[in-house]
Image (tube, rainbow, N blue to C red; front, top):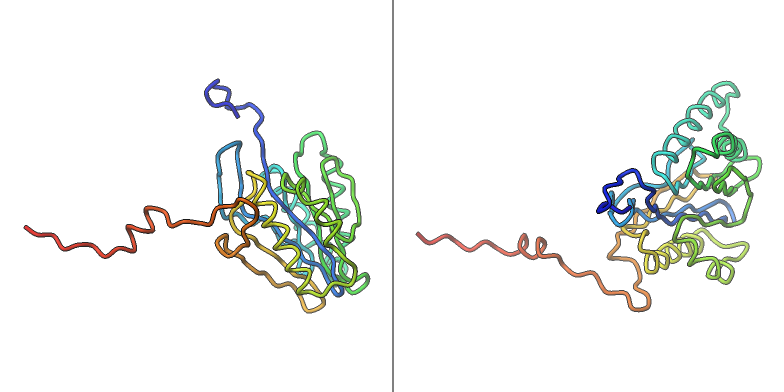
Length: 236
Protein backbone atom coordinates (compact mmCIF):
# COMPACT_ATOMS: atom_id res chain seq x y z
CA UNK A 1 0.00 0.00 0.00
CA UNK A 2 1.56 3.31 -1.09
CA UNK A 3 0.57 5.78 1.64
CA UNK A 4 2.64 8.59 0.12
CA UNK A 5 0.38 8.63 -2.96
CA UNK A 6 -2.63 9.33 -0.75
CA UNK A 7 -4.60 6.35 -2.08
CA UNK A 8 -5.55 4.49 1.11
CA UNK A 9 -7.94 2.24 -0.84
CA UNK A 10 -5.16 0.76 -2.97
CA UNK A 11 -4.69 -3.03 -2.75
CA UNK A 12 -2.24 -4.15 -0.10
CA UNK A 13 -0.42 -7.41 0.50
CA UNK A 14 -1.54 -9.81 3.21
CA UNK A 15 0.59 -12.72 4.41
CA UNK A 16 0.56 -15.70 6.74
CA UNK A 17 1.55 -19.33 7.08
CA UNK A 18 -1.04 -22.03 7.82
CA UNK A 19 -0.51 -25.80 7.85
CA UNK A 20 -2.62 -28.93 8.26
CA UNK A 21 -1.07 -32.39 8.71
CA UNK A 22 -2.64 -35.83 9.26
CA UNK A 23 -1.03 -38.43 11.45
CA UNK A 24 -1.89 -41.92 12.67
CA UNK A 25 -4.92 -41.09 14.82
CA UNK A 26 -5.76 -37.47 14.09
CA UNK A 27 -4.63 -34.15 12.65
CA UNK A 28 -2.41 -31.24 13.64
CA UNK A 29 -3.13 -27.68 12.53
CA UNK A 30 -0.55 -24.90 12.87
CA UNK A 31 -0.16 -21.21 12.09
CA UNK A 32 2.00 -18.20 12.77
CA UNK A 33 0.50 -15.13 14.46
CA UNK A 34 1.44 -12.10 12.34
CA UNK A 35 -1.40 -10.07 10.79
CA UNK A 36 0.10 -7.66 8.28
CA UNK A 37 -1.27 -4.76 6.27
CA UNK A 38 1.33 -4.14 3.61
CA UNK A 39 4.53 -3.28 5.50
CA UNK A 40 2.65 -2.62 8.75
CA UNK A 41 2.20 -5.38 11.34
CA UNK A 42 -1.36 -4.83 12.56
CA UNK A 43 -1.30 -7.65 15.12
CA UNK A 44 1.73 -9.70 16.15
CA UNK A 45 -0.12 -12.27 18.28
CA UNK A 46 -3.34 -13.06 16.40
CA UNK A 47 -4.99 -16.50 16.53
CA UNK A 48 -5.51 -17.85 13.00
CA UNK A 49 -6.87 -21.25 14.10
CA UNK A 50 -10.60 -20.91 14.75
CA UNK A 51 -12.90 -23.49 16.33
CA UNK A 52 -15.94 -24.47 14.27
CA UNK A 53 -17.18 -27.35 16.47
CA UNK A 54 -15.71 -29.43 19.28
CA UNK A 55 -14.03 -31.69 16.72
CA UNK A 56 -13.41 -29.38 13.73
CA UNK A 57 -11.13 -26.35 13.42
CA UNK A 58 -10.24 -24.01 10.55
CA UNK A 59 -6.98 -22.23 9.65
CA UNK A 60 -7.46 -18.81 8.08
CA UNK A 61 -5.30 -16.94 5.57
CA UNK A 62 -5.75 -13.95 3.27
CA UNK A 63 -8.14 -11.19 4.29
CA UNK A 64 -8.77 -11.44 8.03
CA UNK A 65 -12.25 -9.94 7.67
CA UNK A 66 -13.25 -12.36 4.89
CA UNK A 67 -11.94 -15.45 6.67
CA UNK A 68 -13.58 -14.45 9.96
CA UNK A 69 -17.01 -13.93 8.43
CA UNK A 70 -16.82 -17.27 6.58
CA UNK A 71 -15.86 -18.97 9.85
CA UNK A 72 -18.75 -17.28 11.69
CA UNK A 73 -21.31 -18.37 9.09
CA UNK A 74 -20.04 -21.96 9.03
CA UNK A 75 -20.00 -22.15 12.83
CA UNK A 76 -23.64 -21.00 12.93
CA UNK A 77 -24.77 -23.52 10.28
CA UNK A 78 -22.89 -26.37 11.96
CA UNK A 79 -24.52 -25.52 15.29
CA UNK A 80 -27.95 -25.84 13.66
CA UNK A 81 -26.84 -29.04 11.90
CA UNK A 82 -25.69 -30.57 15.20
CA UNK A 83 -29.00 -29.75 16.90
CA UNK A 84 -31.00 -31.32 14.05
CA UNK A 85 -28.92 -34.52 13.89
CA UNK A 86 -28.28 -34.86 17.60
CA UNK A 87 -24.59 -35.66 17.02
CA UNK A 88 -21.40 -33.78 16.09
CA UNK A 89 -20.83 -32.75 12.49
CA UNK A 90 -18.33 -34.68 10.38
CA UNK A 91 -15.22 -32.98 9.05
CA UNK A 92 -16.44 -33.48 5.47
CA UNK A 93 -19.72 -31.65 6.16
CA UNK A 94 -17.85 -28.71 7.72
CA UNK A 95 -15.38 -28.52 4.83
CA UNK A 96 -18.14 -28.62 2.24
CA UNK A 97 -19.97 -25.78 3.97
CA UNK A 98 -16.78 -23.71 3.81
CA UNK A 99 -16.40 -24.68 0.15
CA UNK A 100 -20.01 -23.72 -0.64
CA UNK A 101 -19.70 -20.24 0.89
CA UNK A 102 -16.26 -19.65 -0.64
CA UNK A 103 -17.35 -20.73 -4.13
CA UNK A 104 -20.65 -18.83 -4.14
CA UNK A 105 -18.80 -15.65 -3.13
CA UNK A 106 -15.54 -16.23 -4.99
CA UNK A 107 -15.65 -12.82 -6.69
CA UNK A 108 -15.79 -11.02 -3.35
CA UNK A 109 -13.67 -13.13 -0.99
CA UNK A 110 -9.88 -13.08 -0.67
CA UNK A 111 -9.22 -15.97 1.66
CA UNK A 112 -7.66 -19.42 1.60
CA UNK A 113 -8.73 -21.87 4.30
CA UNK A 114 -7.72 -25.24 5.75
CA UNK A 115 -10.34 -27.34 7.56
CA UNK A 116 -9.16 -30.13 9.83
CA UNK A 117 -10.71 -32.37 12.43
CA UNK A 118 -11.63 -35.86 13.59
CA UNK A 119 -14.92 -37.76 13.48
CA UNK A 120 -15.94 -41.32 14.30
CA UNK A 121 -16.72 -42.19 10.69
CA UNK A 122 -13.50 -41.27 8.86
CA UNK A 123 -11.02 -40.37 11.59
CA UNK A 124 -8.67 -37.44 11.07
CA UNK A 125 -9.17 -35.49 7.84
CA UNK A 126 -7.63 -32.38 6.27
CA UNK A 127 -9.32 -30.33 3.52
CA UNK A 128 -7.82 -27.39 1.67
CA UNK A 129 -10.14 -24.68 0.29
CA UNK A 130 -7.98 -22.18 -1.66
CA UNK A 131 -9.09 -18.99 -3.41
CA UNK A 132 -12.03 -19.70 -5.69
CA UNK A 133 -13.73 -22.34 -3.57
CA UNK A 134 -12.12 -25.59 -4.75
CA UNK A 135 -12.06 -28.35 -2.13
CA UNK A 136 -9.18 -30.81 -1.88
CA UNK A 137 -8.86 -33.70 0.58
CA UNK A 138 -5.15 -34.07 1.31
CA UNK A 139 -2.83 -35.85 3.75
CA UNK A 140 -1.19 -32.48 4.38
CA UNK A 141 -1.71 -28.99 3.03
CA UNK A 142 -0.13 -25.57 3.44
CA UNK A 143 -1.37 -22.08 2.69
CA UNK A 144 -0.56 -18.39 2.89
CA UNK A 145 2.44 -16.45 1.64
CA UNK A 146 4.85 -18.57 3.70
CA UNK A 147 3.75 -21.76 1.94
CA UNK A 148 5.92 -20.89 -1.09
CA UNK A 149 8.99 -21.80 0.97
CA UNK A 150 7.63 -25.10 2.29
CA UNK A 151 6.48 -27.31 -0.60
CA UNK A 152 9.83 -29.01 -1.13
CA UNK A 153 10.35 -29.36 2.61
CA UNK A 154 7.01 -31.17 3.04
CA UNK A 155 7.66 -33.44 0.06
CA UNK A 156 10.79 -34.60 1.89
CA UNK A 157 9.66 -34.50 5.54
CA UNK A 158 6.06 -35.74 5.57
CA UNK A 159 5.45 -39.47 5.81
CA UNK A 160 2.49 -41.76 6.39
CA UNK A 161 1.89 -43.22 9.84
CA UNK A 162 3.54 -40.44 11.83
CA UNK A 163 2.98 -40.30 15.57
CA UNK A 164 1.30 -37.31 17.21
CA UNK A 165 4.64 -36.03 18.51
CA UNK A 166 6.28 -36.32 15.08
CA UNK A 167 3.39 -34.45 13.43
CA UNK A 168 3.47 -31.64 16.00
CA UNK A 169 7.26 -31.27 15.66
CA UNK A 170 6.92 -31.19 11.86
CA UNK A 171 4.31 -28.42 11.97
CA UNK A 172 6.33 -26.27 14.40
CA UNK A 173 9.51 -26.74 12.35
CA UNK A 174 7.70 -25.86 9.11
CA UNK A 175 6.12 -22.69 10.50
CA UNK A 176 9.45 -21.57 11.96
CA UNK A 177 11.11 -22.14 8.56
CA UNK A 178 8.44 -20.01 6.88
CA UNK A 179 8.85 -17.27 9.50
CA UNK A 180 12.60 -17.22 8.77
CA UNK A 181 12.07 -16.57 5.04
CA UNK A 182 8.68 -14.86 4.71
CA UNK A 183 8.49 -11.25 5.88
CA UNK A 184 4.70 -11.45 6.20
CA UNK A 185 4.87 -14.39 8.64
CA UNK A 186 6.10 -14.05 12.19
CA UNK A 187 5.29 -13.83 15.87
CA UNK A 188 4.51 -17.03 17.75
CA UNK A 189 3.44 -20.51 16.60
CA UNK A 190 0.07 -21.94 17.62
CA UNK A 191 -0.99 -25.53 17.05
CA UNK A 192 -4.19 -27.51 17.57
CA UNK A 193 -4.13 -31.32 17.75
CA UNK A 194 -7.47 -33.07 17.17
CA UNK A 195 -8.11 -36.78 17.71
CA UNK A 196 -10.62 -39.15 19.35
CA UNK A 197 -9.79 -37.66 22.76
CA UNK A 198 -10.73 -34.12 21.68
CA UNK A 199 -8.73 -31.02 20.77
CA UNK A 200 -5.68 -29.62 22.54
CA UNK A 201 -3.91 -26.32 21.89
CA UNK A 202 -0.20 -25.58 22.21
CA UNK A 203 1.67 -22.27 22.14
CA UNK A 204 5.31 -21.75 21.13
CA UNK A 205 6.73 -18.24 21.84
CA UNK A 206 8.91 -16.73 19.14
CA UNK A 207 12.08 -16.82 21.25
CA UNK A 208 11.77 -20.61 21.69
CA UNK A 209 11.65 -21.38 17.95
CA UNK A 210 14.77 -22.73 16.21
CA UNK A 211 16.94 -20.24 14.32
CA UNK A 212 17.78 -20.99 10.69
CA UNK A 213 20.37 -19.76 8.20
CA UNK A 214 21.43 -16.12 8.83
CA UNK A 215 18.64 -15.51 11.34
CA UNK A 216 19.50 -13.20 14.21
CA UNK A 217 18.84 -14.24 17.78
CA UNK A 218 16.21 -12.14 19.60
CA UNK A 219 17.63 -9.25 21.61
CA UNK A 220 16.21 -7.43 24.59
CA UNK A 221 14.61 -4.16 23.57
CA UNK A 222 15.52 -0.87 25.24
CA UNK A 223 12.18 -0.97 27.11
CA UNK A 224 13.02 -4.44 28.51
CA UNK A 225 16.42 -3.25 29.69
CA UNK A 226 15.03 -0.10 31.30
CA UNK A 227 12.18 -1.93 33.05
CA UNK A 228 14.49 -4.60 34.49
CA UNK A 229 17.05 -2.11 35.83
CA UNK A 230 16.52 -0.97 39.41
CA UNK A 231 15.79 2.78 39.59
CA UNK A 232 18.43 4.91 41.21
CA UNK A 233 17.34 6.95 44.23
CA UNK A 234 16.74 10.65 43.66
CA UNK A 235 19.13 12.97 45.49
CA UNK A 236 17.78 16.41 46.31
